[in-house]
Length: 74
Image 1: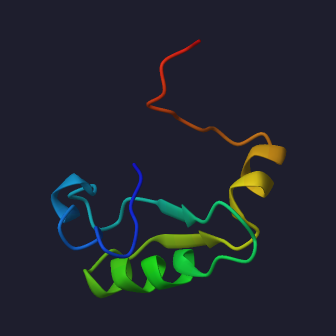
Image 2: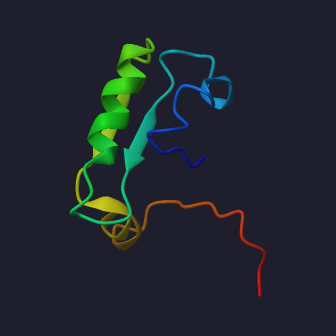
């Protein structure tokens, strides 16, 4: 799911209801710090198992970790 700072509170119903669910947050680049803010906001909402991928989306993909996209295949 994609969230940004302005949407975090309003889209809370899309988050896993299980407060112990593992949630990873990341930014598109290494210069963005929104993932840190979002991780703190999720913890403030009671989520207990939140991790930040500090090196961003490119690092996540380079590590071979799973990604999802809502873009239609070309």
